[in-house]
Image 1 (cartoon, rainbow, N blue to C red):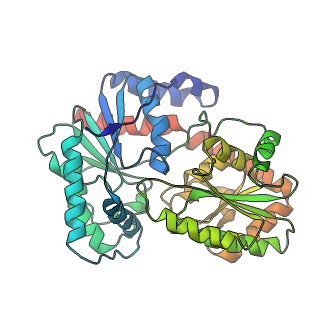
Image 2 (image 1 turned 180 degrees about the vertical axis):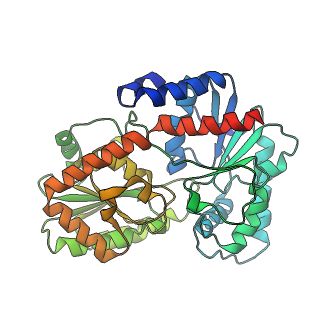
Length: 414
């Protein structure tokens, strides 16, 4: 059997402290209608990525509503995850390259077939996250559950070879979900295609309230000088996050903001073999500047430390060039910390109106916005609070649960 991630049960009512009554009541009502329904999320790693971040809070909250929710994780070897990382990148527009054109297809399908055979299939609804398990439905043709494929990346311009390979398997699902309508490939043919943005949980250790002075004290042990300005990027060690572009923008900004520090906080995941190469290259670059700090979940930087970095930083940078959503943007804005971010993917959803003035398209723009905000602390604080309001109203976990349950209700009615 596939590994089931061990989680407890949440409490929907505690969100009444921060969210409007109407939203919570709507979530509770949907839970009552679907009480006892068996729902299972499937993905490829229990830690280290955006999907895992979502499910850690999402599954317990579903359970608190009376839904019998679980989370199963597929397995595969390094060859499989090297292929699926390539598929992931190619859905976001990178050209897919394989030394043996047919063998990667065979390996991908064989691993999906093995995982399908080991799946606990006793559920009413399966939600399959991203390309790694996208073909499992194909190998369970007699399963009577509703199957939903959830795409968390910007798939608006996928590599044609990869998309034509994956599309038939995706179209065997009952529905597909994308972060925003602009991510939906034009040739996808499904009766039900929905859009719903991800969300963050304000009560996790990554997002719970910590006083800023305590955060600064916490970061001193990690090499940060609390008396000097600090900007931080939090993300996977991934080329789409453009970490070298962030370093280049920092170097330009430092010429006008003496003493500026940059923290690059990353995470590794078991389904991302490219991360190690990026981590090594970043460390080589960081060694040229004592004020650049590289830390990860393998060097003692867990969720609480990420929380501290996001609260203690004067500014968060997320210079992505492709981005499905960018949970770290929501995390920072929830804490009232202003963000300078790449004008990519789902990030603009989180930075509407005046916040959108700090979406950037190149290194020079990024450096310019960093300098302006560091030199104008009152403006920075005001914008951070505006960002907090956006996240509160649109991007907290109960809203995502509501959207998912509304889709499930519709599918079950059919």
